[in-house]
Amino acid sequence: MEIGSILEFDDKELYMDNPQKGIDDFTLPFMNGEKYNINFYQNARNATEALCLYLKSQISSVILPDYVCSTVSDSINRAGIDVIRYHLNKDFQFDIEEINQLMKDYSEADKKTVLYIVHYFGKALDSSLVALAKEWMSKGYTVFEDITMSIFSKDDGNFGFGNYIIGSLRKWLPIPDGGFIASKNLLPEVPEFEDISRYCYYSYLAQEMKRDYIRGGETDNVLKEDYMRHYKKSIDYLFSDYTIYPVSGITEKYLSNYSCENIIARRKANYKYFYEKLADIDFVKPLIPVSDNYLPFGMIVTTNNRDELLSFLVSKDVYCNVHWRLDYEGLGEEAKLLSSSIMTIPCDQRYGTKDFDRIVEVLKEYKSGK
Image 1: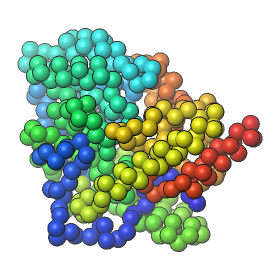
Image 2 (image 1 turned 90 degrees about the vertical axis):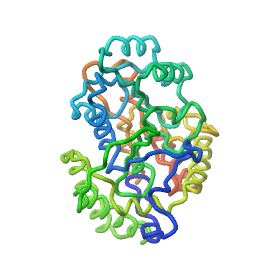
Image 3 (image 1 turned 45 degrees about the vertical axis):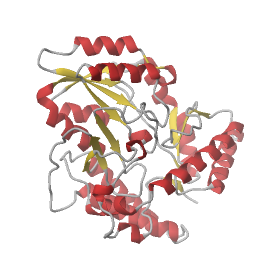
Image 4 (image 1 turned 180 degrees about the vertical axis):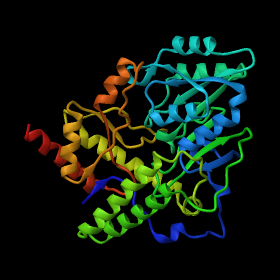
């Protein structure tokens, strides 16, 4: 069975109009039933750029960790705002004094720096970083909190505390698009388009075709080639069209119908089982421990000869991601090391114990061939 790659569409009923619920009822665990203003966009990249444009007159620069997807800094730069880097240390820790000094150095009389914080893969933030962020917020500064890699986590006071919370839903759910800004502050107007983007169109086709391929027993290789070709087209359009789009209607319908609780329960059970199974694999090191409050994006591991292992897994129909391949001037040593060794093995809601048993056997097969 194929494991990984794009999330195929779910049951068709989940993409139909729901007369009882709408997108305005959308919530996430960290919200605790409180009312947030939420804007939905095609992706988190759009959300970040829209937010920066909205606040541009108040922002001198954004203080950003060096270990984060390049689309984040690109979005900020496209809004005409400078990015200043702070550096990742071992175990997803940071030099608090470095961040503190940067916040002071790059503020101006009428504009202030924004502190951008990333929740890495379902790992709790260092308490000193949370305390520093709240201290600057108390002085009137703004914190952008990126929860993309920890969307379904909940930790009162330590998660979802920023002025503006940014995330990508399309990485977690079977939807063609979906990023958001959530805040108790006012938000910018979302642009309106009559048609969906070409990225969204081809992503939709790919996910629908993959559902048919998976449910058809994975025997139609022509269908597999078709969905992979459409997926590649979607990615090509994603990185060539930087228009700020609203979220699509099909994603709105899914978000009005799906069960957040069921997905969280399945993912938590999967992660715990897989984490324990990997204890027997000595060349793969999981980075994020099992937690009651935090739900990891996937099984985030480091390994030597990462790219060789990735290729071997693909040959066995196991498709993993790398978050992230980074190479730019000023990248810190820890970020370089992590970028060269990290990989994400899927353990999302599509899978069960038999799938993780198979992955472990494939990993053992790789080791035996060394």
